[in-house]
Image (cartoon, rainbow, N blue to C red):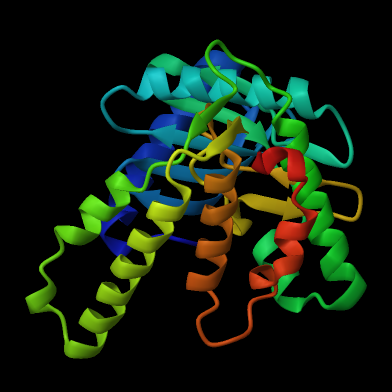
Length: 268
């Protein structure tokens, strides 16, 4: 099991039985076989499974509005699949849904997470990884929805969050770091407020754990919703997540090479 807390294990057992009953009724007995619990959270569970002989991921969403989440996820995956096409840029496609039950079945992608691949990569291979990631993002940017293609930069929301922190409750060292960050962002905001930012197709969990690397392709996984957002924000999410999860070692993704390989058209 991975990413599972003991608190939710009993609920996961009950949900697995419910999933099996629902799938047997909808798809026929023996068409779905749950294999391994991958994640159990308050919002639901994720299993690896076999669906009509194919290895898949089954997600059961157990929260208000689950049917809408499933429908939005299906639409997002179809949108990315049309834009990305085939190798080397891919997304784990939706194979079946049961919105009323909060169930969605997607392709299982066999490979290493991009985080794992980056941590062990060096030299030419790292450059190849980062170039492919930039290409994935550029291809996703071809998705068009109603509305503007760009927005303008404003630091106001982030600064308001930092300004509202209870600084006096933090240890002196942490307080100094947060205050330094606040002042740095304030200066950055003065310099860049109003700068045009290119919008592209993406999702809020754009980080290295949600990509699978294979020799042939880079696969996005665990995509729940599609929305237009600044490419710079997605790149920032990626770099920030990688740095946070590699605090004691030099993170390959923190290299300026990543930004060099992100197509310049995305940053305008």
